[in-house]
Image (cartoon, rainbow, N blue to C red):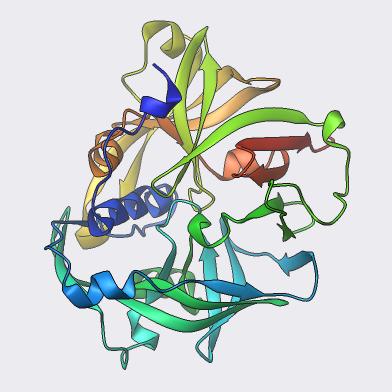
Length: 339
């Protein structure tokens, strides 16, 4: 199946926020899980449609912006200031744009709201709002559409002030480099052709290249296991990589199951999954041996996005090397870390 057909229908924003369950459900050895957001979005008001015409702008005096990355376990976050409120944003390339913790933005008048429901019942209201500014290091974004949700459960489990999630939609006009060994993310300003205006720290000819696509807030790519090509997404907030347990037999034969583990979610909801290792995973020009994964149903993710994805790459993938992603060029370059 062509990757362009992986996601075949565009769903409302509030339903697509369902992806957050996988972003944080892969906290296997802790007991926190973001609720499964799945909402039916009512027709947008005329006000919302007018607000949609606002244009996001950004300002930086440099063509390369370096932002330090910090860690809470396997969760990556960075310092930010949103409309004067300082705190931490979790780097979450699976989140739909900028998602804010409503605990710190209670005075905001929402553009519209809708009720959401989750795996354990109602999870409250989802709000949409425009903010004036987002400051990330030396770059400032102006006029950004955001979502306001309750992220208090993440703060409570991590002991960390989390003012929101930073989705890839905010960064899609830049090439961005993630380096887990040196703990930073670099943003490269691009020209209209998608070429970086600043010199990269390495020659692309010396890297491994993986084609990617960007569909409805997801970075999608293909991998190969046992001769079978599988479409997956890449999510920086997934603390472990995840594969659908209903893979083709040839692919399943390459996975060594080690034990069962429980994912623990909101409302004490638990889901049993398998922990194992893939003998060999091929990504175009790059391969990983003994790649750790979780195996379970990927149905909730596919239902939320109307997709046929077979898994999600997370922290384990980022540990393999420096990752440079340019969505305008539809390429991911990886520079393997020395072992």
